[in-house]
Image (tube, rainbow, N blue to C red; front, side, top):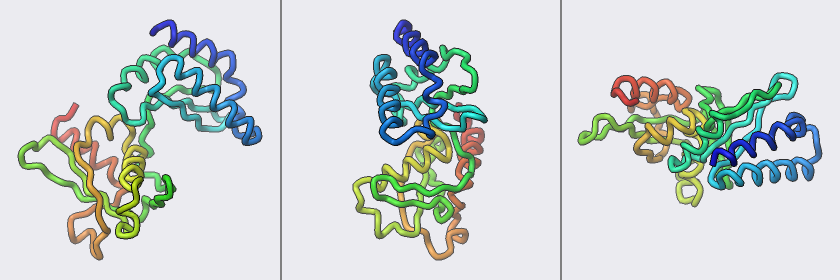
Length: 207
């Protein structure tokens, strides 16, 4: 396994320049480069995936994600722990939290706007250390039966609080409609969810 990690990073060191300017090439070439990156990564582990962000003049990021699958968290961590120093590159294990930055997504036809969403903390009497959430969106009745609706909710949460925190610390998620007066019903704006989860982790002594 260590040899496969080394082989991936040797390949990336040799080819990293092409990925610095990934957004400057045409779509066909971009797709080819990304397919090559995925293929090389999957020689090490075919259940983890690469994401590239940033700007070449400011520095690029290569994020390695297990898409929330805890069975492959160790593979992600082992890979990033052996990442080399490459100029203009930062290597990150797991999708990081955006910490309150608003965004919209269109996930498999499900459109969600974080600025219009709210959440309600849920308590489990039999397990006071668990974290449960009801995520509410104003178009709930229109999208609740969509096969990818809950997957879209999970993507939003993964982005707002980070892949690892969402997988390890959030125990239960349900969805619902935003009520007429969400604050009166004890709800908080969804963009506050990172601070809430971090507070709950400390308050409930979750490591």
